[in-house]
Image (cartoon, rainbow, N blue to C red; front, side, top):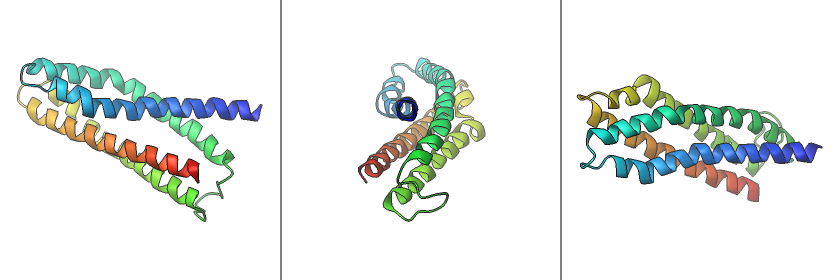
Length: 158
């Protein structure tokens, strides 16, 4: 029964990874370059604003799934030595990975709650500045996400 639960939670954790990191990778590499072209003009920022609005629920849900499944998966991992015990490489890799994830959350909060990039894209006066901020956020989130995946792979190979 325990292995079925672990398998299910690992699957959910992986699915949340695909949603969160995949969103920012596609946003940085495909959607932003296509939708910020001069030919689309204001329609491009309208589409990006709508993508941002509609993806929010999925991103928040993936973060919730990360927390619930990640805590369980960490506790049952044989490499886990205990809270704040980083006596092996796996523990150090997980620490760095979780610090990166906290950085991603802080970055998302900064761009969305403080700078208010989404609503700014809907205005005529701030649309170009908002688009550049949105591009920066997507790029930083994509880079951090790829690093999280790398750290996960290294920890699993450990």
